[in-house]
Image 1 (cartoon, rainbow over the protein chains, first blue to last red):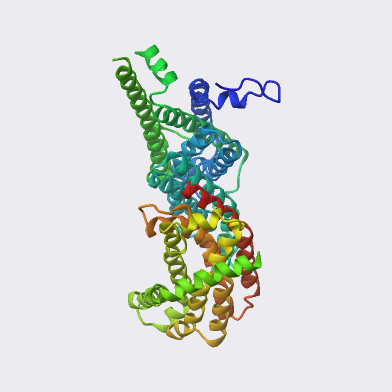
Image 2 (spheres, each protein chain N blue to C red):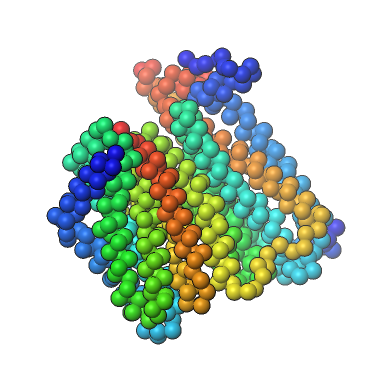
Length: 254
Length: 57
Length: 222
C-alpha cells in the first residue's frame, strides 16, 4: 500500500506521501508549529513594543515594521515553496505534493495582502502617502495577483487532476517570472523617481529593532507552516472522502 | 520600558490609528484563517462520518 | 523539422486568411482601446505625449491576450489539436509554428498600426521609431507568454477574463521595458538598454515557453 523502504535509511518521504500517514503526521505537527508561532510572536511583540526604542524620525509608527516586513518576506517565501511543491508533484507524481501547493496558496495570498495593508498604513505616517508605487510594494501587489491567478485557475477546472497540474504549471511559470518582474519593477521605479535616491522606509535599525523583526519573521514562518499543514489535512479529508482509512478515522471519533 | 502608562501605549505617540489599524488587521486575518480552517476540518470530518454511515447501513 | 514548422505556419496563416474577420477584429480592438484613453483623459497633448507609450502597450497586451483564444481553441474544438500533438512531429515545433503564425497576424499588424496611433498621441518621429522597434521586439514575448495561459485554460468556462487575469501579471516586464524604451527616447536618452532587455525577454520566452505550453496542452487534453 505504501512504501516503507527507501534508498536513504531513515528518509521515509514516500511513507508520508500516503494520505493517511500525512494526515496523522500533520495532525501532530500543526499544534507544535502553532505553539512555536504563538511563543515567538509573544517574544517578538514584547521586544518590539517594550524593548525597542522610539525612532527619531518616524516616532512610534515604525513599529508597524514588525508585522509588515515578516508578512512581505512570507508572501515571497511561501510562493517559492508553493512552486517547489508543484515541481515535486510533477517529478514524483504524488498527490500530496499538489495538495501542499494548494494548501499554501491562500496563506501566501493572505501574507501578500497583509504586507500591502500594513505597508500602506506605515507609508502614510512615514512617507506621507498610503501608496506610492515603490518597487517592493508594487512587486508584492503583482505577487498577490499571481496567487489569485493560481487559485482562480484551480477553481475553474472541475477535474481535480487537471486542476492540480495546470495550477502547478502556472506556479512554476510564475516563480521563474517573479525575479524578472521584481527587477523590471525596480528599473521602472528608479526611472520615474528621477535622480532621487531610493529612500527606504526602514529607520536606522537599532539592535533591539532588528531582533524583534527577526523573531517576528520566525513567528510568521511557523504560523504559515501550521496554517498550510492544517489546510492540507482538510483537503486530504475532502479528497479522500469515502476511503477506508477516513471511515475508520471517523469511526474512532464517532 | 518605553511607556509611562497604558494610555501612552495605546496612543502610540499619536499614531494609534496606523499602528493598531495595522496590527488589528493582522490579528483579524490570523483569527479568520484559524477559525476558517477549524470549521473546514470539522466539516470534512462530518462529511466522512456521513459517508461511513451510508456505507454501514 | 523546418518543413514541419513551415507547414504548420502555412496552415495557420491560411486559416487566418479565410477568417479574415477575426484578424481584423483584433486590430480594431487595439485601435478602439487606444482611442478610449484620450476620451477618458482629455485631449491635452502634453498629457497624451506622456501616457502615449504606456497606453499603446497596454492596448497591445490586451489585444494579444484576447486574440490568443483563437490560437488553440479552434483546433481544440474540432480535434485537430490532439492529432497534431499525436503526430510524429515534436510538439514544440507545432507550438512554435502556431505562435509564429499568430504573431504574424496580430503582433505584426499591431506593431505597424502603432504608427498612426503615435500621431494621435503626438509622439515625435524618434519616439515613434522606438515604439515600433519595441513592439516588434516585445510582441513575440506577449504571444509566447499568452500562449501558456491559453493552453492552461483550454475549454474552460471563465473564457477571456480568466486568461487575462493569469497572463497580465506575467507580461509586466515587457510592458515596463517596452514603454521605458520610448520614455528614454522622449527624454533624449538611448533606448538601447530597454530594447535589448525586450529582445532578451522574447528570446528567453521562446526558449522556455514552449516547454510550458506543451505541458499545459497535454494536461488540458488528458
